[in-house]
Length: 142
Image 1: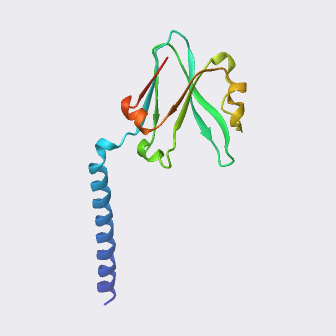
Image 2: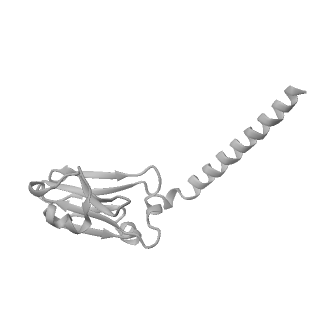
Image 3: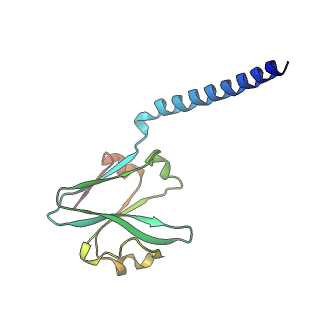
């Protein structure tokens, strides 16, 4: 009797796991063309730059965490999920190109109004979903 109860419980769990797996697989296949997990940023200038994406904490303070790019180098901002999911409530992504000589670094958050005081901004990109789709998920400086 106990074995029958255990088998019935296991059957239910197996069916639940199979059902969830099918839903996840169907979602992934359905949205594969609509899902982009990376944004490519390219330095087409003759200068070494810092390419950053604005980070915002729960207190609405900012910092710029970036990567140094030599001329003609590129970097990728990757997600385990779709970048498209970031664009709720008309949200926009902000990227900055910063001069490495005056780059504050990534150690601490500060008032977002101070970004241009603490860093020498060479270019500021404010992009929505349409901008990224139109650029094939690639941003090029300059």
